Image (cartoon, rainbow over all chains, first blue to last red; front, top):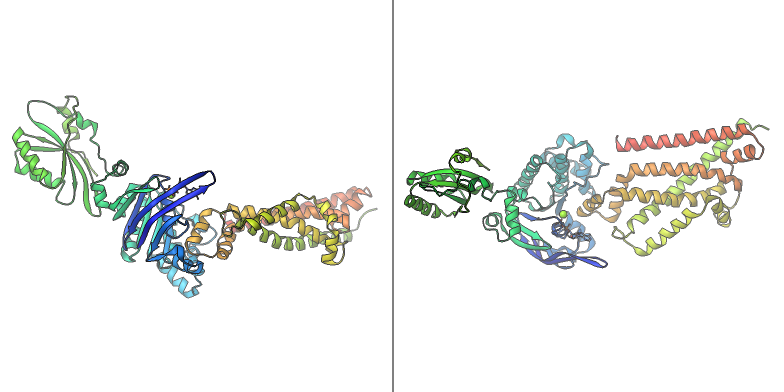
Length: 359
Length: 216
Ligand SMILES: Nc1ncnc2c1ncn2[C@@H]1O[C@H](COP(=O)(O)OP(=O)(O)O)[C@@H](O)[C@H]1O
Ligand SMILES: [Mg+2]
């Protein structure tokens, strides 16, 4: 568990002071994969670095597993750091040493026995899938493999906390996914609490259960990932969510709006959870005398729960549409009519975009 | 009058003797001061304004004194150290004082080249400052240090040529006394040729080591 209690940090560079952290209060519970997201310069790195005191808070306390590291002696602090692994954006591996020796380093510093080191390093290399690279040097590895070495090194001393500073920001999307999966496995199999900072919402979406959004040195929003995604309170958060789940109504949809003789109205349904989305559409279509076209869809998964929105066109007579709408609203989803007036060229467009559902 | 083969060989031996002994002591001093210059600077693991602001100017002073002047200026100190102020052994004292500070700057540069992220990682895993220096900084800078020592060695070969001024002997001395003062072109040619070969040999050796360490 990590508790940030009114943590502030001021960088005093002579004439210009930078308030990198302003009274941060957050708690990372045991077993969390806690994400901190924010733009560059928001103070994320400074925040994570206060956990293992690479940066000392100017005021406030960071309590790690019940202890305030800032109050410890140098010796106790070094011991406490063995319980906190850390991985970095640029991996920070020793290029002059083999993969094996890199991973062995924290154990060597702790003056462990040779045999013990060998066993532990081999075990952890197997876990990250690099047992055949033990004798290679870092510059012979891909970015993803280097980060695996970084992870193995961080886990060598069996920490209860893993800090990840932009751990996937230097990696391509596919490698990012693989590394995130590995982090998830670490969280589940070793019960390690993970604090991960990133500027990519994808990372939060993929593995975090809790999130804090940082802006300009402050936490502007924090909570369960699902709650934050479902009810973002700030524009910054909404923008981050939009980077992984498209939210705007595509302009082509506006082109379909019409005021023709027979009724067709367009709605955006935001949903979260299993009972929503596609099942609602088909249930509604079955139960009422309406035709429903899915014009657009953005669906993703948050901790195994579908999340996203569908833009649907409901065609039928006025009463029937109203009743269908009422039914949908009762399903615990957010429904909004798409109303902004567009041109009247509806008919031919409709079938073209009709089935564009993508996640 | 021509010089004998024995004379040249003897001079080569004197040069190598002066270079290797002063390189040995110069490296010890240089590496120590170089490390000190790095770790005591602002924001580093042993930040210490006091030590830094003493070591840094001292190194600068020694770096700015021309070797031929240093040679003469420290004669009393040389006598104190080795009991004599003339001869090959006496030349080693000024050579060490000349090359030590030079090596310290080269070492400083090599160590500063090491990515700061390495130190971050070391601190994060709870390394002591001594461990950071010897388990992280030095190994990472090793290839670069080899090149630095190579450069210093070649500088030393050049400096030994001036050691003749205090009777230090060596190839440079032969070239000056027999070649310049007695107009023997062939002596100049032979000694210079040998110096060139020595310098080339040192540089090649340094490069080979460096490449081996960097594995390129
Ligand atoms: N060592 C430092 N000295 C001075 N200013 C710093 C230092 N480290 C970070 N800052 C400043 O603090 C702010 C937050 O930086 P950082 O925590 O790195 O942000 P992020 O990781 O979110 O991009 C920035 O304005 C940055 O310039
Ligand atoms: Mg950062």
